[in-house]
Length: 401
Ligand code: FEO
Image (cartoon, rainbow, N blue to C red; front, side, top):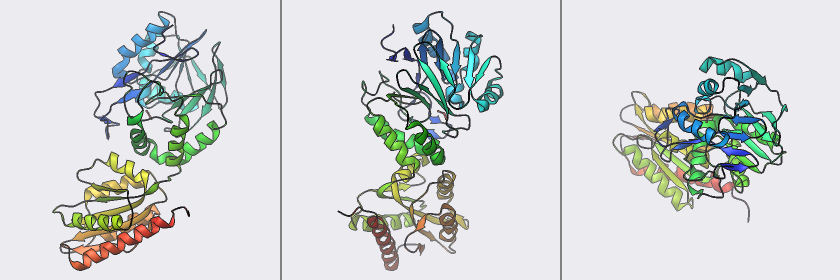
């Protein structure tokens, strides 16, 4: 028995750490890396739950063999097909040619499409069952958490949920994988960033999955990214629940573009007045410097959003426009929105951001402020009025004490 890899019963951790990739999905920075988690159930019948990025197959195979030696794996359960988890399917099939792949109707077309792998399969529907001996697995379809084929596997013997991307986060596993044996501090912010960047559009499917899974006696959550959760399950579930409802804390994100510092001075004036009005959490992002990954994380965290843009070629400043697209793509809901901007000879950005206000269905707070060229007394005054309107709107949501 390999105690270092054991999670519970006969379930082992056989995932890997990626400390090399700069950008997840080619877009999202990984300052703390990321883990690709896979789980091996060393039961009377051996089953593997998900695989890892193909770059790490050698490490993965060594981990598997350190537990089961030359015994065959009978089942490969595929909860999710994004290639960070499915990337080793073809190689696993080469090493274990008799393996039966377990997935749902949506899974097998993707396996063939990505990897050209066919062969014996067990196609499961909602609530289907697989008995491995000690562990008894039941399958739950959770489409769009994060792809349409996504499902979760629940071990009824020991209460272990294999949750795919659900409840995952960025960050490698440094030394241990169990939340009780590692310092989990770095994962909380990385969980919000992971959720907002990767899963953020799919709030409703996450809510549906949580309603379904909430009835199960879950003791351990084995996600495909980040620690194996045990004592932190309530905290993790709380974060996913809040984010997928698009609930946010009191605070304001001010995201602005600025070529020569004039629009930035508007942002400073707004922030100062927000602070004077008692708003403590103010996060400022110069869109040309902050990575969208972190701006999205903060936009998912806070209720207030104030966007500033200079007019550029009769349009919104391109970096601001790119951020607005990312917000719309994620269908972020229930935010209070303020707008400001500047122009040199003809204003367009503020007007065009009005289209974003309509599309997002955010509640527009105060009057948009538009400045010609540089700050004047009237601009300070208008920025102050906008900031006070935002502060007042946020304060209305404070609980009565
Ligand atoms: Fe970690 Fe959607 O894959």
